[in-house]
Image 1 (cartoon, rainbow, N blue to C red):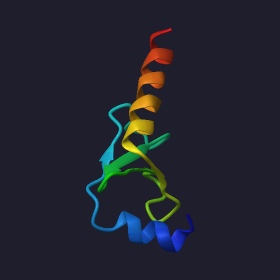
Image 2 (image 1 turned 90 degrees about the vertical axis):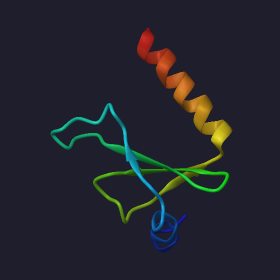
Image 3 (image 1 turned 180 degrees about the vertical axis):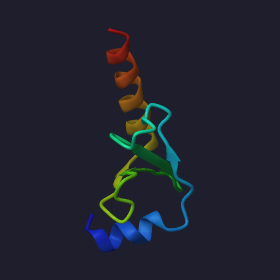
Length: 71
């Protein structure tokens, strides 16, 4: 997806910043649910690229991240 497409995708979505993002503005991720898709972006570059995945892929990713954090 190029930047022009990501700007179009990013508009009109309700973005949520990760609760694990630090207040100092370091590694911040935002997620927005669209129609049948999940969009992920860097909160420091809101006009930049947006990763778009299926809801199933997002659930799998979050599940793996939680498992790895528990180790």
